[in-house]
Amino acid sequence: MQTILHENLSPGRNEHSQPIGSPLANWTPRAQPPRTPMMGTRCDVVMLDPAAHFDDLWDAFQTDPSGKSWTYLFVDMPATREALRAYLDAQAKTADPLCHTLIDTSTGRAVGIASFMRIDANMGVIEVGNINYSERLKRTAVATEVMFLMMKRVFDELGYRRYEWKCDSLNHPSRKAAERYGFVYEGTFRQAVTYKGRNRDTAWFSMIDKEWPALKRAYEAWLDPANFDAQGAQRRGLADMIKEAQR
Image 1: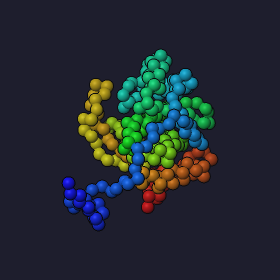
Image 2: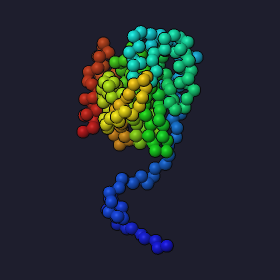
Image 3: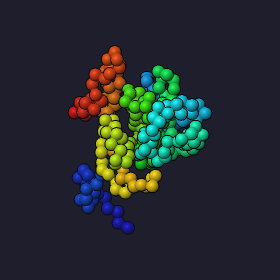
Image 4: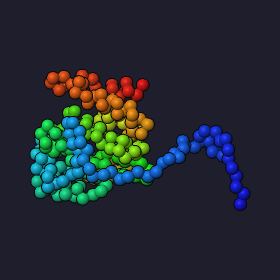
């Protein structure tokens, strides 16, 4: 068999002059996310432990007795303590999704859950999902630091290439949150999922490793105590800081 050597190929072109993706000469599969805690200033993100976190989570989720925070999750709000405990027990047993409890360090209490999921260590792709922020967590700096800690694990600690956020296309608060956090909208997969007896068109968002340095600078600037007044109100918004960091 004749060996053909292709030298001096144009960047982004193969020997057939076809456009190809940029090379990843040093890429190796990444590790699975560890079960170690992610420690922050305002919050800690730790592995879900129903025995330790159940009472706090039950109390936190009762701050929204309507259950509307569960509308776009794959299960409805558990109606009883026993049902929530069974749900948390099931979540704690899986490696994917890998469910975490979100602890507000000012109170030491659990205020929500979030997961790493659809973990593809070979390709360096991972999704954040199953996010359930209680009313004690929503619209707080703690909520933003949760996302920052999880991003740091994905990009800084593990070296993944791509971090995804997906949601029901009709879930406008989730879409707005993804954009505020710096995820880029990529499109909508029509009729992608069925759940709770209904259709779901799924909106896809992502951020990638080359975007991370600018995003990290913006998060660090936003989370700086100097960005908050004596009443705890932000002086500058995260979205504005992200735009500035990306220039």
